Amino acid sequence: MTAPHLRATPSQTVGPFFAHALPYETGPEVVPGWRPGAIRVHGRVLDGAGTAVPDALVEIWQADEDGEVPRRPGGLRRAGHGFSGFGRCATSPDGHYWFDTVKPGAAGGGGAAPFIAVLVFARGLLKPVFTRLYFPEDGAVHAGDPLLAAVPAARRGTLVAEREDGGAYRFDIHLQGEGETVFLGF
Amino acid sequence: MSHPPYLYPGYRSTVLRAPAHEPVMPVLGPDSVELTSPVFGHEELGALDADLTGRHPGEPLGERIIVTGRLLDGSGRPVRGALVEVWQANAAGRYAHGGDRHPAPLDPNFTGAGRCLTDGEGRYRFVTIKPGAYPWRNHRNAWRPAHIHFSVFGTAFAQRLVTQMYFPGDPLFAHDPILRSIPEQDDRDLLVSRFDLDATEPEWALGYQWDIVLGDTPTEA
Image (tube, rainbow over all chains, first blue to last red; front, top):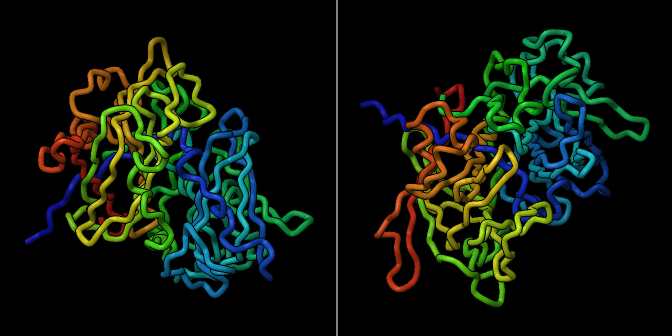
C-alpha cells in the first residue's frame, strides 16, 4: 500500500504588512553580539532596478561552530548565550538586514563547505527565495562543494560573503538584474 | 507544482522582484541544514498567543471566528509541535501597521497577530475575528479578498511555507491576481477554508476549517 499523496498548499506572498506580527526583538541575535566568537552578517536586499527592498523578511538557519544542527527549542526566546541556529530580521527602509551569529562548522557530507541557509520573503515574491551564504576565507573547500561546483563560475561569487575591514561579513541579496543572486530550487 | 511562478505581471510587485534565472538545484539535494528545521517550545509562546481577541482590555469589533485545521506532510502524516504564525487585517480591512493607508478605522482592541504550536495530531487553532476585504493599489479598483496570512515551519527549512487562507464564496477571488497567480484552479481552491459547524461554538463563534499540506523535500519526492 502506498501512502496517499496530498497536493501541497500553494505559497502566497508575505505581503507588505507583516511587521506587527513576524519580527521579534531578538530575531536578529542568533547569539548575543557580545559573545566571544560572535560574527556580524549583514547586507541589503535589492530589486531588479538596484532599489532597496524595504519590506523583506530575511531568515537564516545554520549549524553551530562544530557543524552541529541545533535540535532544541529556542528560536524565539533564547536563554543567556544559547545558540538556536535560527534568526529573523525585517529589512530597514534602506533594505538593510543584520544578524549576530557564529561561523558555522561544515555540517553537510560530501565535501560541503560551511554555509548559512538564507530565506527571503517579500511583497512581490509569490514564494520565498532560498540561497546560501558561504564564507570568503573557505575558498580552498569551495572548490569541492557540490552546490558551488554546480553553479556557473560567473555567478558563484553571489553566494560568497565579503569580509569587511571591521570583520563583519557583507552579503547583499539581488533578487533580479545585474549580479542576481543564485537561488536554489527547493 | 502547485506554487505560483515568481513572475506574474498581473501582480505588479513581481516585475522587479522575481528572479530571472532558473533556480539551481543542488546535485545532492538540500543539505543537512536545509533538511532540518528550527524547533520551538511552548515556553517561548504566551498563553494568549492563539487568541487574537484576548490581547487587549476590550473585545475587538467584528464577527468572532475560530480557525482550525491540521498541518500535514504530503503523505498525510501530522506535523507536530510546529510553529504556526498568523496575521491579518481587522474587521474593517485595516492592518495595525503604520504603512497601511486604507481610510478604514483601526480597532484599539485588535492587533491581528497570533501564533501557536501544532498539537499531537498536527492541529492548530486560533480564535480571531473575520478580516475585512481591503483595497490595494495594484491596478484600478483593486481589492484583496478577505484573508488570514499563515507562516508555517515544517520539519525541514526547505519546507518553509508562507501563504494566505481565504473564506468560502468570496466574490473577489475572480479579480485577485495574488490568488490567480497559482496556475491551477484546483490548487487555488486549496487556500479556501470551509465553514465547519463542528468547529463552531454555540452562542459564541463560527468555525472555519483549513488544512495545510507541506511539500515534500526534494529528496523525498
